[in-house]
Image (tube, rainbow, N blue to C red; front, side, top):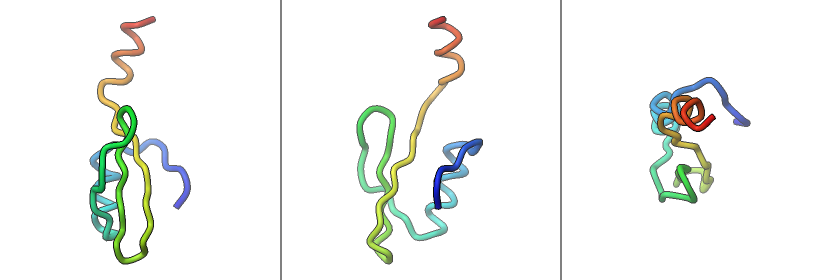
Length: 59
């Protein structure tokens, strides 16, 4: 599938669920690992919250 940018977390989750992926576990930081039992594949997606606001505040 490659890298996807410009999508919100909820949009990515909806697409993954539609493709048969299931939430597997929480990864390092704010990333999640999803697993597809049909294809035996894993994918990692970021789940950042308030990133823009935090960057602006910290600068």
